[in-house]
Image (cartoon, rainbow, N blue to C red; front, side, top):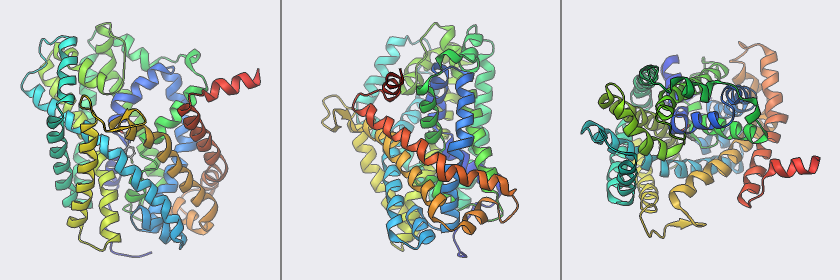
Amino acid sequence: MENNRSTFASKFGTIAAIAGSAVGLGNIWKFPYVAGENGGAAFLLIYIGITLLISIPVLLSEFAVGRHGQGNAFRSFVNLTGKKGWGAVGILELLGAIFVLASYCVIAGWSLEYIVQSVAGGFQGMTQAQMDAQFDGFVASGWRPIVWMVAFLIINAIVLGMGVTKGIERCSKFMIPALFCILVMLAGVNLWQPGFQEGAAFILKPNWSAVSGHTVLAALGQSFFSLSIGMAAMITYGSYIQRQESLNGVGVIVSLATVLMAILAGLAIFPSVFSYGIEPTKGADLVFKTLPPLFAELPGGYFISILFFILLFFAALTTSLSIMESLVAFFSEELHIKRVWALAIGFAIILISSTLCAMSQMPDSHILVGGETLFDWTDKFCSAYILPLGGLACVILVGWFVPHHVVEHELTSSGKTPLWIYKFIVFMMKYICPVVIIILLVNCILDYFGVDMIAALMSLIH
Ligand code: PFF
């Protein structure tokens, strides 16, 4: 299908932009912790296996839909199948994109506040209790997180306003290597920490006794989230991948890059945590409460704090660009309007949803869903339901409904990749991935009702 859509201009730019989407907050504040809790290197091995066998085929199905469909997430499905009905999958993924971005932008805004605070030298000599109070007060204040979230959205808008090649690609080509260098530097500084061995062992020493059915499900969920599957981003970016690029090659490189970044993040974070005898945690508490006073104690602590929050900001920005771009492409192509107007619509939607998310964290807020703040709910709802559903629909479409010659053309880079690799990927897409994703979905649904699927299965077997 020939047209005049934008594309990523170079191989490195393609990989940087896609890795930029994949390497996000999840890699820095969640992946290393989940790995540590689930058997360290044992988890990493399972994670890599699952990524190669399950997640990459799903990712490739999204790339193929985008590159062959040559449109936004909705249009690509319609173009590929000739049926409007399949466009519903694209709409579902775009809704997921809005949900995930709603809380993502709020957190990214926090990283901006913390860059400013670290520049002002704010964490030197602070105790853990003071840090907790400071962060809780900041989040509860409502307006300050909103101001930073708006600033973050404006930065997104500026980059996206420059277009796919000059904006997203150029920015990612700078930020992804920068992110890598910052991680190496932070991990390097931690080498001299007394808790380095313990911290490194937490994520790198295999502990097979911690491995269970839950580990496999945790690896699967983390792998899908990490590769930005099921939320329109990879379909949209897939549509910008040039014809001569190998989708398989891009998929494998990006997946390995996310694992590498997560390991480095673990080495940058946990040695400090263990040096002070603190229990490892994940999420906002880890990066905004636990770490700042610990980093301040390190040699060059002032600069380390600044670098760490810049790292978070870069990771969040390259990821949010991919999600926001999915919305911009959708509005500009479906409403036949200029990119700048599509950007304005996307901006307005995320502004409203992120403001509601930020406000839901204020004390006595009534912006709750099922007893949870909107902020927590959007994140969980997306990861648990939209992400697997979107991925499932996409992999089924490509495995079962798209003509073989189209899939072969996309996945063998017009005959360059050995046929057995293509056949293996299609086998996984057709039979294994759907079954595995359905298991993941059932587990999430049962979990909602308080039923532990693995425990229930075990008791059935015994
Ligand atoms: N891959 C991102 C992370 O690990 O933080 C999260 C994400 C981005 C999920 C984009 C889904 C998405 F569409």
